Image 1: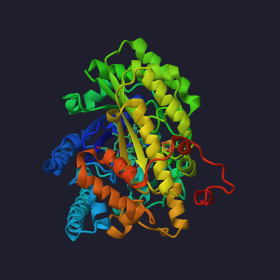
Image 2 (image 1 turned 135 degrees about the vertical axis):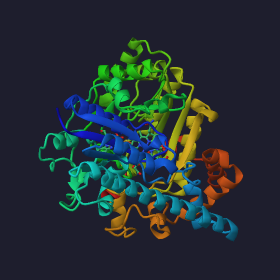
Image 3 (image 1 turned 30 degrees about the vertical axis):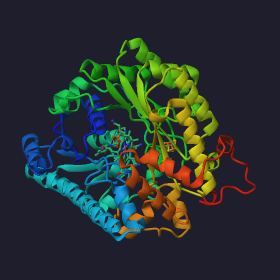
Image 4 (image 1 turned 30 degrees about the horizontal axis):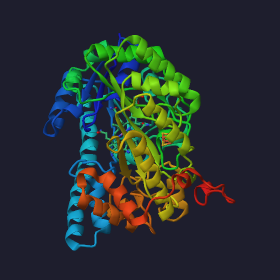
Length: 524
Ligand code: B12
Ligand code: SF4
């Protein structure tokens, strides 16, 4: 019988199913069935009770290994985040001309700033508190930290954590296996605070291969008393991973680095077996958590196989959603998507200008995306599509904006105006991306900057909206929030069209071959 006892603590987070720790616990159970485990999800606990309930959980369970999972830190998107809309406040502060609006932005920004640092320190405090408490019972307790946010900010977080903390990047399954079997784990994507420095380009190392089998939810319910929290109402999309990795190189994206360029396909029958277990517990909504559900054309067959197996399983009343590269669809795929209940998807084309899409190294053919969207509509898709546009990433101009409008209007013709939601983002510059390298080269950022900093002078650079068009976009967004805050994306499109007009669709779809390679990123 093993003496190890593992406590997984998911740090506070907007309620989103903690699929990461669920998969870790499942993996450990399959490898080491005798090890006792427990999941404690602070996402389901009211903030005032965090410390007390964490203490109680540790007192009851007395773990020997503490696994802390931290999902998100940086929220720049225009969502009603903690304490308001961060993008709106930032833009009011940076771009508003009227002093009162500027002041509102400053105050709102200050609230977000305080909430952000409070959360950061609170989470670090919870980790330290947990370790101290656990040491009361087991002096040799080990602490491991991982999760989405840690994968992105692993270099910075190490500075604030106790000596000996193992900081992990990307998937943690094989790291935990090695720790538990007392093997050397230094070849995993991790480092130990106080003992080793993160290796140069650690995050770019390929993850250790892994065969993913269906998560055993009987076991998970056994070690996680609050499991049913996410099933009480049908609002939640429960995460199911169908593959891991993305081969693309989009200039601003960190997923391809965190997950790796190599795509691992989880076996279709295992995925369906996992969905079925959740289905039998009443779950009807699933989010395929892949960086991309169909990362490239060569993975279409795998996606078809999976969806066909879902059809064959008889689960006819489910819905699912995912990030979809809509350039990789076929008519058969479209039919299966509709048949299996896909009721929402996000296409991250970023721009409706083929020229810019190429410059951002996204590998998208916008004409194909349109053709496939038509096929999807013809197959009966009648639900919501969110199209993510990030303006002003690189070489944006009035003409490329006009092209984006033309492209968006075409999507509206296909799906219906009310069914296509333009999600207007500005890129939050992330470490380890090509865009970061470009920002260094262009002197916008200095190596050694702190990507977690929310100080106004750093945040302004990280919330990527450079001049000469930065102030123009600032003004347009402010106008949109003023005029129609509840339909911000569509309002932005409307204002841009009034101010700049709309290009011919054909101009949006064709990118003239350049004499010279893309100006900025090719050099990076
Ligand atoms: C799918 C996804 C979503 C979906 C989630 C749908 C759902 N119902 O589950 C949606 C679209 C809703 C979403 C929303 C958001 N997301 Co998101 N999302 C992702 C994505 C692509 C995959 C996450 C996932 O579930 N993966 C599959 C599971 C199995 O993996 P995992 O959770 O990462 O866990 C593994 C490892 O992290 C590791 N691990 C986890 N914990 C631990 C602990 C230890 C000790 C160890 C060793 C290992 C370990 O092992 C686990 C198993 O392999 C990631 C990017 C990425 N490629 O990782 C971003 C990501 C997690 N999201 C991120 C963010 C910021 C958000 C938002 C806040 C964005 C926004 N502003 O709106 C929102 C809000 C989410 C919320 N909490 O409310 C960030 C978080 C980091 C950061 N920058 O702060 C990420 C990393 C993307 C990024 N650009 O940086 N997201
Ligand atoms: S943006 Fe999407 S397609 Fe591009 S690298 Fe990231 S996950 Fe892959």
